[in-house]
Image 1 (cartoon, rainbow, N blue to C red):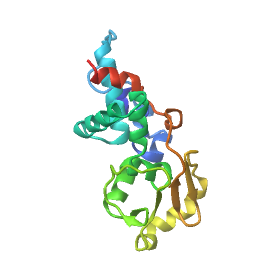
Image 2 (tube, rainbow, N blue to C red; image 1 turned 135 degrees about the horizontal axis):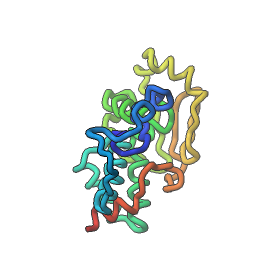
Image 3 (cartoon, one colour; image 1 turned 45 degrees about the vertical axis):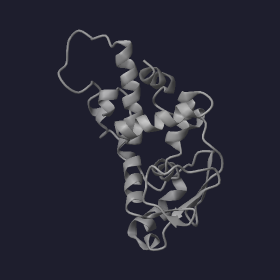
Image 4 (cartoon, rainbow, N blue to C red; image 1 turned 90 degrees about the vertical axis):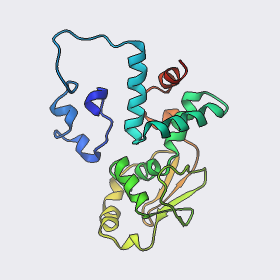
Length: 198
């Protein structure tokens, strides 16, 4: 997926920072190679940006359309609203807090019921986190081997400014809503809006 998109989407966690990364090993796009470079149309560029967003957050098309429709209903710039909604997903915040190495791993942690949202067990990765909400671990999950390893490695991880993390208790909180500048997105929200607005 990274090779198809032409950029690193960091889908494999720490592996993306090593020479084993697919983009490092084979920087060309997948499939048959042509000597003459083919020009991509505007529609193709819009589709590529939309697919980058989908792959990055691990979302299927129907779910992504629903999030886009929600972003359109909100006041303000639709592209910025879309980025904010994607960042507020529970699985993404678990990843941003450093509880997992990738978003797919964060999704699995949430689905298996290890994560608590406001002291309530939540197994819905797409749950939207609000400002002031707390994210922690279930007491039973704190006994697991994964949690013990995480407690040792969490010190080396950095947390974005719109989140706070108690590294001793491993409890995070959303301090403020994320802005498009905070997301460090590998895609352009404006191009995605153009794709759906045709």
